[in-house]
Amino acid sequence: MQAYRGECHCGNISYTLDWPLDALVLRRCGCTFCSKQGVIYTGHPRAVLSVTVKDPAAVSRYAFETHTAECHFCSRCGIYTYAISTIDGRDYAVVNVNTLHDVAAPEPVKVLSFEGETTPERLARRGRSWIASVTVAAAPS
Ligand SMILES: [Zn+2]
Image (cartoon, rainbow, N blue to C red; front, side, top):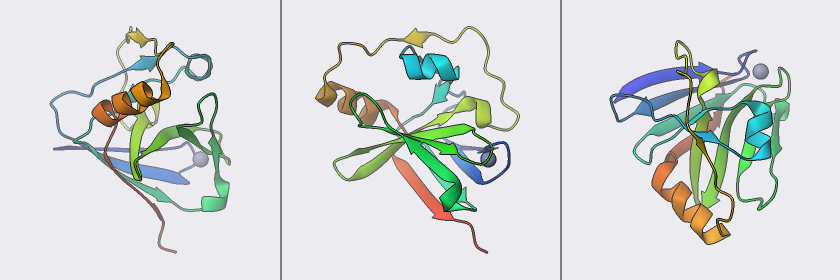
């Protein structure tokens, strides 16, 4: 496991990502939201994501279209940090690579189109490719 650390700009949302492979798997989603964000994702079912939030009231969530994933933003600095999809009671996540420390995504990252996917197909794909071990906790005060 390789350990990566990341955070939003102001540090309200921080996380560690324990990564099971040699290199990060980078993905770009072609939907209008992800294109506007310019977000590059990473995720793997054997990765472990541990998120710490200093001020949970300063986290905003955005869901759209199928409402099967929530994008988590720091509402203080506006940075989109990760998304969570809850499948059969379990949280799966992908992380915004731009919020990792010391990682610059090489260009170009392939843009994936998930258009035409049914909701069950979408959830099955996330179960295969998103981070399957996710904890989000409040920071000790
Ligand atoms: Zn922030």
